[in-house]
Amino acid sequence: MESDLTVSSLPDTMTGPGFDNPQRARARELFRRVINEHADALSSSSSIADRVEQWICNAPLPHRPITESVLSKEFGVGRRIVRQTSRILQQRGVLAPRRGGNGLGGLWVTAPSLGETVAKAADELRLDQAHNVLNEAAHWLAPSLASRNDALSEMVRSLLRFQGVRDAMSAPDRSDNLAEWLANLLLGKISVSQDGDIFLGSLSDISSDYGVSLEVAVEAVRILADARIVKVRRGRAGGVFASASGTGCALHVANAYLATQRVSTADCREVLDQINTGMIELARQRRTLEGLNRIRYAFVQMQQANSGTALGTAWYSFIREIADMAANPLMHFMARALASSILMRRTRSAALPDDAARELLSASVQILDHLDDACQAPIVAAQSRCQKALENYW
Image (cartoon, rainbow, N blue to C red; front, side):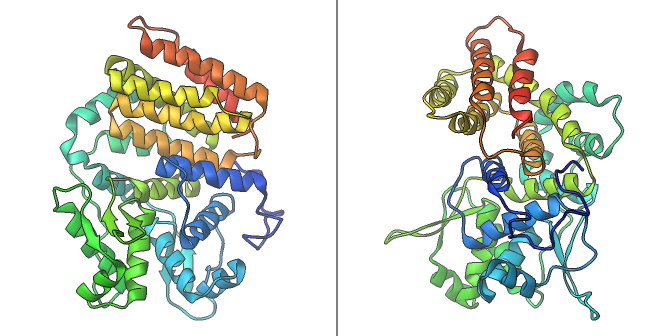
């Protein structure tokens, strides 16, 4: 695993100047933008979970557990926030609880298996209903994987040959963990509804309807909100609503798999290049006026950015709009998984210099020309220029 931290220099703290700095703050911001496709304001528990996940991605696997008392001391928060953070990290597949004495009890860093990673992605993407998506992704990616035999290529190949495996993680029994039990019940209610914006009730309604405390209801909602399954609206007409179907949890599991398998950021970048090139070409083939207008608007936001850093941040919206027009959710998922893993481990600068931003804008012009024109352009070179403009910084 590539990192600018070494075993000898790695600090014991996740919050002090030895670990957290403007570069790492930028990495978390960009990571969240790729994972959630925008930069929403985070709850305290999700923000702390991002910091812990970043520490794990950039550190050797620890030989001791991370206890809730350690989290409370590190981040200066109380029991309620710590518990929410713990549940979120467990749902992301980053930590798992173990019982035991002699310092063995607590939250241990987990290394998701290939099967668990693929099953979570397949479940959220509903790949058992997407044979055309699988075949199309295989067309673009299988040839480039022919000579590879590593953890990353195995993950991609396993997703491409998906054959109906469902999520192996069973719902917990009510007596095991109330917050996870309630989160699964709410998820079940959402999955059987045909309404994409169903109202689940206020937090107090959920607490009353399911016979749990308000604290448990808040924990369950935080778990689902972190995975982009629900959203909480404030105000008189507010409450908890089902969100657009997301892959937040699966992306975190994939990130944990890539980090603990020591997949290098260079290997991630190589496969990401292939995926982005394929999505740009698919977007050209499937272009619509509405899709092109959204891409052009994102490009204008890049042009109007008041700094190199703002332009670079806007580029992620530009490439996301292209992925949406390409309409292959599996390729889009893999691109986000690899990009987020790269950002969390490779980011070396809080700012994107102006010369790198100009190169990024120039290459994006070439991509936009390719989408606008039925004639093919040298898109592989343009996509590669974008990645090279970013690689020394983000």
